Length: 401
Image (cartoon, rainbow, N blue to C red; front, side, top):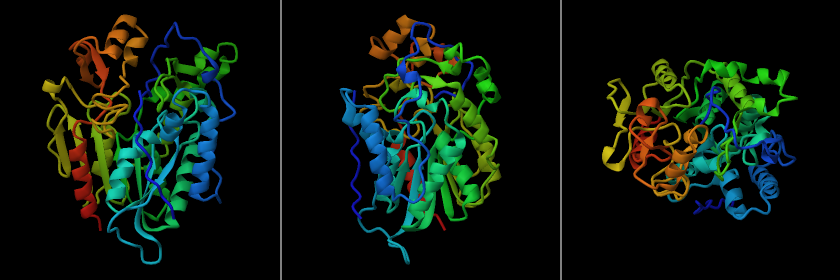
């Protein structure tokens, strides 16, 4: 099987339904459902066929854009074969395989460094693109969480055909979907969770009330209408996405029996990180491990506390968006082309411009009232401790039964 390594291209979180919309950005074509929307994948296709068909849809959706090829590569599902002295399966090509699932409004770009890590550890890797993602924000207007879950199930079936041991890894909503699938699939041997969306604000439950009147007020369908300048993540965020995410969390188990590795930030402003603590306490496998990014030490069994404040690097705290991206990433990294300043767009155009253009020293961290009081702030989009995270994951893998 040919399994090329995807290129990490040089390029140039929102579940809070209380966010205001940007007044001077009008709804556009991108805020409608498109004919190129990624739908629920049908069983029967090989994973290679699924990738090819999805890439074709993405190519059509982004045709004519300046960086079209890079955008397609970053949003497309991908697969990796292990390299070096990996273990073969008893009756299948590989001993271990892992399915990667990105977060809500995100893309497989956010899973590529994790994919490269697991590849180096001898895992067969597959990464899916969730329905409604990778094209334009309006394609999330009508999606249902069951379609996301079905896509994860499809990926798990494809991977299980090639591996003896099936593992799941997910970021944010992808973490929730991984937990949901692990509860329903006895083949799953372990899960890796990164900023998992195990619980979100209860206000999201009512996010779709707008459907009663949004036929004459289309903007009511949106939590936030943003510039959508990020090639690998929607910036505009519709209420249906929040409602579907809340519905998914209502179907999650409080624990799982398989080994769990998790990494989360105490300062997470997108999901309730305390739910990750509760989940890890309830999941009692002896191999479990949590990496906890916080400005205050947490002394708990099987928890590695990492001080997320690095004042000498202008970093105040960790953030939901930061965990899975290393500092050297050309898009979201420390010197990356993308700077996350959306929290200023709704209220302060001057600070939004100063933040994005780095006209002066800018703090980095989660968008909290405490951090905003320190001065100009951009949301942290990379993990300064990513190398240590890889070491922790490697140690966890070495201890797997």
